[in-house]
Length: 323
Image (cartoon, rainbow, N blue to C red; front, top):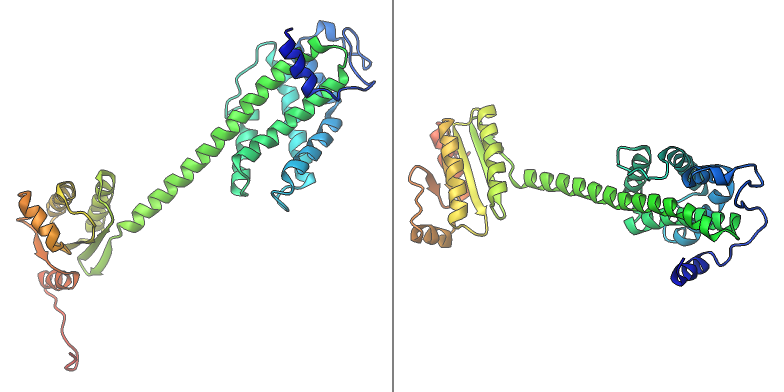
């Protein structure tokens, strides 16, 4: 073992001393270490030293994170989490053999880490602090092993290797769980925003309004076209008003998307009235040679609504001589 490894072990386990320790061969508690695999020995040691490891881990977590999340972490919760994880660790090391088994999110340990990371995310605990939460458990186990094996550095290294390998996997899984949770939240929020940005409003019997707001790209164009066609079918829309007042840029791409939506609406028997094209947008479309020949166009939404009502045999009248 090189000098760098010795220095590392000395720095990590400098406080390792005590009398209740395991030696090569038969231990005080009757475990024949020499005939067991490292993972089997580690499994046994975790079970026998469960209480000491849990207590040290709780102290470390509360000292590191308790002040950052007051009222969020409790000693009872930490005790329960540590007890469950040590049981899972012991079961894992007792069955994996010398070659560590890859921990997946579908495994028992993987599900535990995913649930922990998701729960911490919902409670406002940062992912780096969730990682520290797990690292603290690794330190507590490592420190206990060092106390049990003060004179057996070689065996200590052999036991720490599978422990560190497992904890590294779990730490990576915690970040993966966080990113997965974030992606789901972002996808849900994005979907909600898209639905809110392309509502289909029933103005009158058989008259629909589709106000477009914001940049129209391929994804949004497909989404508002689908919603418009569904609404035309559901409400038997005879006239559909597409209002583009809130579209900041009206270029070739936007025009093509809207033309496709218009063609689809007309195939379902709905006439289209377009409103809100700005003077600049009209000039741009003219220069580009884009024409909405089959579409009735009005300068404002008010004029478009009046036109749509006229197409279905309705009109707006003043009441009692109002101006």
